[in-house]
Image (cartoon, rainbow, N blue to C red; front, side):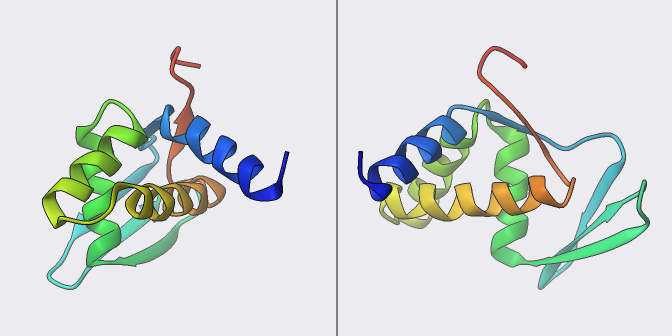
Length: 107
């Protein structure tokens, strides 16, 4: 299996997962950015308007893939491109403890 194929398989698995904002994380939208606060660490994280839109779509969607589909349709963008960007964003947020990724069976 090629590296690109491996990357796509990992991305596909992530797209089937659900992103959950844990109780110790709060966020607020402003005109040009969204500020996310991890109450456990006291650290603020700022994301641009697009990041805020992705975060809101994640909370309104059953899966990460469904959020990507919604965003692709809303912005008339190729689904594969949006899936790649949303997957990378989710990985970054999860690495920072700002979202939890749960597989399709709730785990």
